[in-house]
Length: 277
Image (cartoon, rainbow, N blue to C red):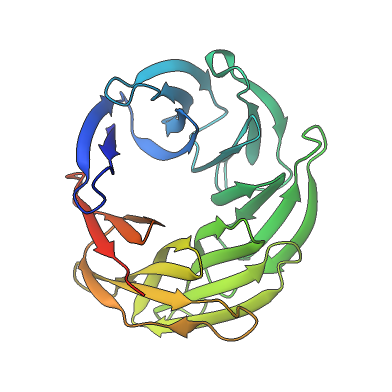
């Protein structure tokens, strides 16, 4: 199990800079500045990447149980333990001193997927009843749920934006295989718009500028669908742009006109797509 660091100085040809191995399975990670906070088994590990060619572990914390998701920001790391057996449901970790991390507080609900932006933690539950919540964590001693909504399907990924939208990749709520992309008001969690693709399951969502990219997994086979949406006028239905078929894929991110899709075969291969518009 390892984290691989790539240079994007040539965005069309990512170059492997370093590989850092861990002793246990990696569930999730999030980066803030030069530190990558990583869930490894039932531990939170802070990885210093200030020298990208020689990453170094600088601190670790034993967690209540195995973490499922992570979101970092404002000197805190939020860890969700999923549903059904995680005690507590989730925690906020003080990481101001990454060499000596401590538990700040327990979270008021269980969650399997999460993201953070500007004092708000967005949480999504992965089992019924499917729901998305916004938690005000400005006063970390008293985290407060300020909004919640029943999602259109099984939550599989969420992504908060600086312009107060929350994007979600969701699965079918009916037992039929459908992939759902949904956009929410990040304050009220009112649904702005959504789109459904049959015979696929929405797995991951990324964004840049006025575009959202959703990775859909087909019912059968290794081929996935990379579907871009133009969402400038988000109060209207999202405008699906021409999609492309990709071979597998486990994660997605976007920036500077490029979309990066991580391979699903464990090789660490990155597929690069350029979005010209």
